[in-house]
Image 1: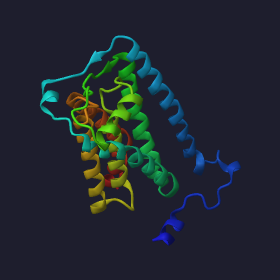
Image 2 (image 1 turned 90 degrees about the vertical axis):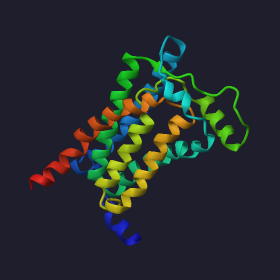
Image 3 (image 1 turned 90 degrees about the horizontal axis):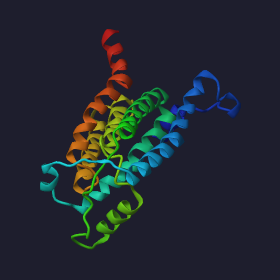
Length: 226
């Protein structure tokens, strides 16, 4: 297995002076992340201090708070970060498609947050129980904004990882089932730990479709036409 990873490593002959060469320019796509992180927290902070639309529906009140789903919620972070790093190192064409998807979906969501500041007020206060999992939830609530929720970037990003897995030569086919399960659990978690309304999940669906058809679908279309 390790031999196949060594064989697929995309930077065997790479030197930093080569970074502007065509075969390595994709690395510059990583510059999107500092821009995104700063924008996310600035926009969220501004919205939190001003007026924002509270996203909520009757179904949210019917869904119980389940602190155990904080685990798949947290798994979201290594879920997409590791896929970005893996594809960057070993499957560059998939990395480019994944980054294109993420840039499209995250930028679209951020534009919505700027034009339509929104948030939620569903965090349980006080906690219905006290255990290790509610403690993790409380830390998330303390460090996160209650804004920038609709559409849910947790959901759209998770399915970007699924599409990348299906596009990947190493994780495609039956191996992608695990990625689907993880993405579904992450989607459930955002509602069950009261980070998002069901409406945020539904709003993520068109964002996901736009990202998929602009980033991943052209490759499959070319395959069918070949």
